[in-house]
Length: 565
Image: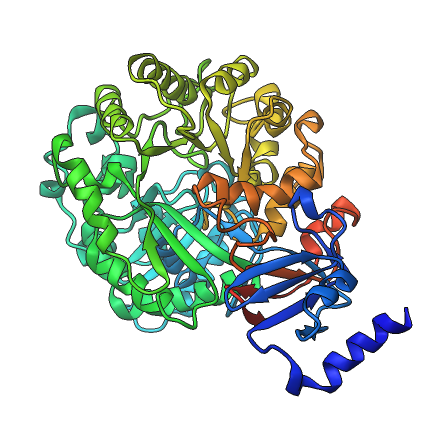
């Protein structure tokens, strides 16, 4: 023991002899998620990579000249958190808006308490409007949810103001509601939706000022001319950057980035900088591209995306995002047994278009990520995947079920057989399971939403994401949701679908890297991987599970560079 302390003292007292290209990090608890180093308490980094992992006393024998960094000797170090599904543009718009949502939001510069009934929602909106200055300044508010706040249309918003443009962004971001002045401000008219087919035409209601799903896509370019001006997006992205770093995230992914090189340039400007405290990877959206081109042109256009990144922003090669059914927050998911009130879900890609697009990317060797929320939407994905495997077998295709809102028990074994992986949003359970048990879906199905317990039992890889702003981009909040499954009514929804803390931690680290095909470089504290790690005040594997979301995040390291909170 005396020799051990002497070696530490010698290294600290005589830095002149230290190898400054390397550094040893010591932790109270070190969670490597590498089975070779379950009892390690220290690791060596060289430049941006992890060189070695093990016990400090053993590492000092191998690297006696290396300086020990004891900054985190009383803290817990875990692999760098990975948020593999976030929408930076939508997050930036949210950061710039007045948030009135069903849940609490704490972001840099704004604290918004959740409201879950109509009167309180309208009162909050009226109060915000009264403090919005000159009437020419549009009021943009995000967070509305019709099942909590009641129906809202153009005429309701006109009662709040006929002089100020008011744009309400639904909690799902799949629906926008505009007052009369906003329709005028954004120059939206019948000609903008005249090209829609009969099915999609119902999703663009000028009289009510309500636009959803593909009806929204038709008018989105005009709205984005205001929402995505460089000065607004830069401000929103800078706030988003601070938010991401404060939540311990070292790497982000964006499956389904918009087909707009100008918007991408703004993202590159903010996130591509060398001082950005995380690295970004983007995946194109076939749905957005199909608004601008024919299916036969998709592959060439997808490849062009690879040149759109810059600096610390890159596009992931051989990855694509497709869409099955509609939004969870809008109850537009397609359910096998329908809804209690008789309404129907919505397909985001028409059946034949989905099949053709899936086959195109499958044959080209892409990993296909598919947005899904209903068990009917999951059936569609599994059927198409099955057809393609039989026609053109592929190993380790990692077809990814994204969000995984509702599923049926019988689908789990089929998912295992077909080799899919799951990227789930467990926050749905907290914010939606109680109300959806009473409205639209029903108790039995809603208790089993995001059925991760069954998926884990089937040994299907699970990663967790926020889909920010669908949930806070906080890996600890996601872990807390998946481990506890406590909803806002303080009830446990589907206790059989809870997962362990270690499975949840892998879901925001190692399995997130696996979902992106980056597990050789990220996701665990292992020799040869990038030196990405997150510093915590408490061990998420041993703390009371009910306290996971309250663990303090003290900082991160990204490719060997420290960023303290």
